Image (cartoon, rainbow, N blue to C red; front, side, top):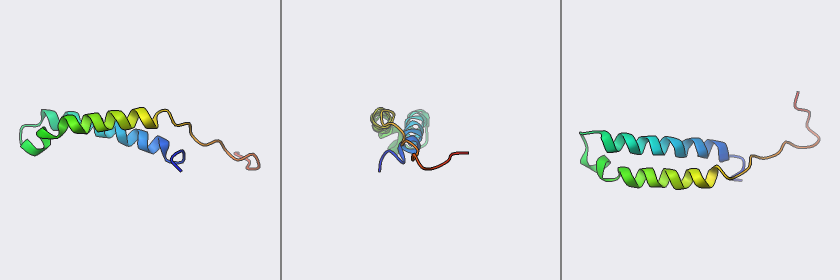
Length: 65
């Protein structure tokens, strides 16, 4: 099941890391600043997990033209 969505989850984890950096640098919300490092770390761990999952192979009987 995770193989089907591995690339999308990998992209989402990169977005989480970028959001964590934005949260760290913004001056308006102390809440976002407080949880920025946690957001970066969660995105980093998720990226390390989902980048190692191989995408599913196409079925042998399906013509991909």
